[in-house]
Length: 214
Ligand code: SF4
Image 1: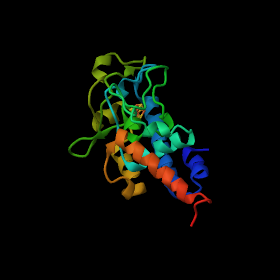
Image 2 (image 1 turned 60 degrees about the vertical axis):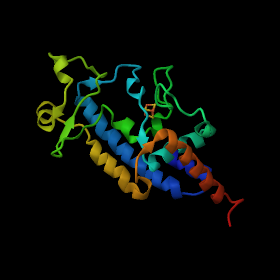
Image 3 (image 1 turned 45 degrees about the vertical axis):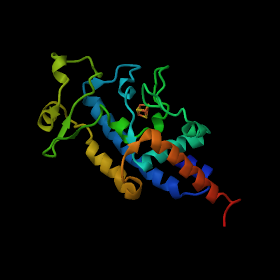
């Protein structure tokens, strides 16, 4: 079962879970595009790297915060989001230093984390462009001048060198907003958005419970 499907069993209604299912579909579509790009791209993350989560706190839309909070609620660790210690000066508060996999919400991580290093954005003329993360390694292969690969690639260059283009993060941001614009009005720091999201899920669950139905 997906997070959205599991949430409906906890909150006794389908209102928020059905919207989150649409978010899961957008993320699944992005995953598919990224797999195709990764198959032809020379770049990959070094094993155990998590440098992109250090000194960084994602900004999220409400819909994304609800999705992460849903994972906490389902796993019974939602109290942690309301704790005054929910912050981390060194990195994203959802980052753990130990282990090979650092993100504690990998399944529900927000769009900005999904696209980082694995999607392009647009230049001021609206053309796709792509820059790899500076910590990315280059796969072994026929890349003679590896240092030249670490640059901003134009759409024209990408089209010449690769049979598949990286996904366009601008399109995916619009797709997430389009699910329900009232839940994606403005971006907010994950540190303040997550406590609000978990309170909303708890209230939704309380009012939908058969014990409290009007
Ligand atoms: S949500 Fe996960 S992937 Fe995103 S910055 Fe935090 S720890 Fe890193």
